[in-house]
Length: 150
Image (tube, rainbow, N blue to C red; front, side):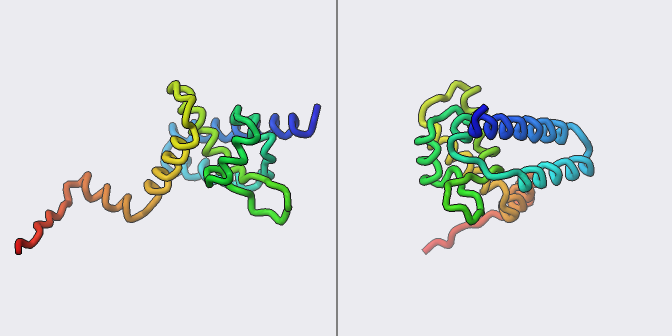
């Protein structure tokens, strides 16, 4: 088995384990959910970065497309001293999940744009100030602002 094939197999197995943990985390109480999410973060952080050839196989895209996605900021370089292009496993996992969802919904074209939109949306949803605002809105704690008339 080639190195790229072995790396692909290991990455797929890692992502399957992570997906299982995330799935279980959705069905348990808050305390256990937090513990499982910590395990997921630690597992992804401890995993080695992925070469573009393996990422291409994981995402079922060409290696050229992977490099384009890195240039566009959808996939990120791993924080390593290596001169080779190595990809951040955590970001690759997030992108793999988005690509899987999009393909399941029948979208096969313009994946780069849609993945980018979803990643941007996810960063908005992680903002504490937005979470506070949405919480206030759900509670009906609104402030109506009336513009001053001239």
